[in-house]
Image 1 (cartoon, rainbow, N blue to C red):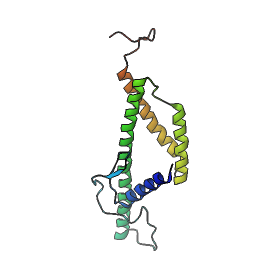
Image 2: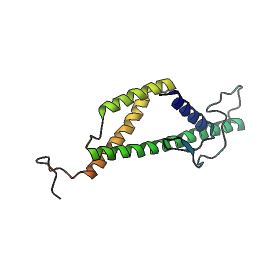
Image 3: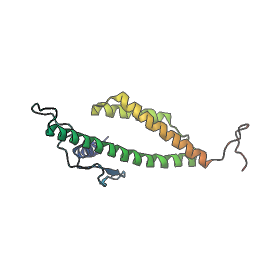
Image 4: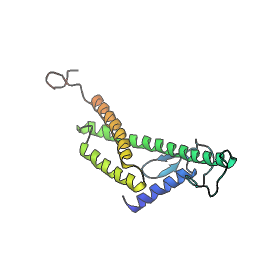
Length: 167
């Protein structure tokens, strides 16, 4: 990944965590602010470390907890929007593959993606095995979509000889 792309990703993450970015639309050309469903104002950080001990039932603790929860809500909204945009692109890939007769899955690419994401996860302080499981879940769903697209585009095959069934 190039430096500019990494800087953009880090800026989006900081913005989402801080609460000044509640939901975003990711269109591949940039990040566009969308309407706020998360509610609330900006948090000062993702997770502030108290500089002194407070009573567990204090208003300040409640505000801190709510601030952290707003950040989590913002991240969840961003993840949903990212996945929606990703699936729009994979839908187009599936249609292209069906049109030109490519297989729904590409094991070599999938393995490269797993390795790339595990590396990114490790660099970000995220468990690489978790990132692999998460990616595998997404890729499996994409492959299912690609198979559905392919089955809708091509005539069903005769079971006996593998030729297209008459319409």
